[in-house]
Image 1: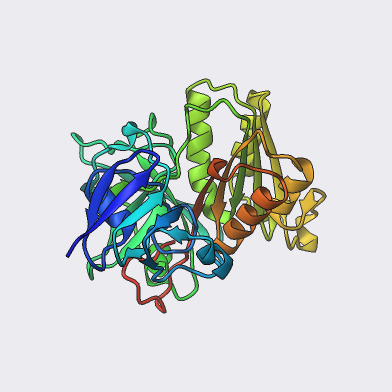
Image 2: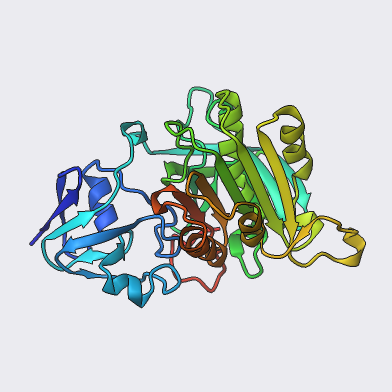
Length: 347
């Protein structure tokens, strides 16, 4: 027996089958609720259950604590209705009605950006284009049925090639293949676009962008799209890594800062080595942003990186810096290794 789900404030309704997540049911009915990892890790799909009860499924404790659950909050990517529900959730704009495609893609170029970061450029068939919003991701479909998820690092206007930033993960079967056996001209199958992490073009608020490691990839797409659209919103990018080599496209970020007076770049290293000769900011990247922006009440924030970093940024930006929760836009990178049993495990 299906459950009726009503969304506030839009009053839209849809049916969810037993065992089906609220998000999957909404997407199946053409309603675009916010989401990111779809794995209960990033908190992008967080909303409130106003009436009815849900099974929270695999929601991670750091993304949805017990106090959140007691307050009626849920992660709709893994929450399953146990009865009819009334939920409170934002719905994305109609331009999110972009067709999801499965396409072949040829590896046009491979470039080692850091010892553990490979930049891939994928070429689609001559008569195909992938429509997407700046910051969204695609799935690479593996032959055994598993998927590996990577953010698109290029802006939508520059879609002749699709750019991916792939970090080598210890024990990661796919990333091991990328770094040891993959070669240019190889073919992949991709599916996308996916995700509700994208540039909100209808806002004029100053943008704070926080990236950890290869979390720079979707942030890069957002920045390049904003520049291409001649948006004059102030933008400040904080990019964190352990070592200098982790800020693998620092020259690009510095070129944006030189060319655009409304853009600023702050690299942050957590564990600089003596040979890095680092004289810049150190510590946690989101903490550096908080030092410079103690009041985020008038900002819009984009955060990409490891789940722990994203969760800490959400907690501190909203709790200490007065950021409105609906202005926190995040994508959480759950790195996949052979230990993962989940066939759709990410990054």
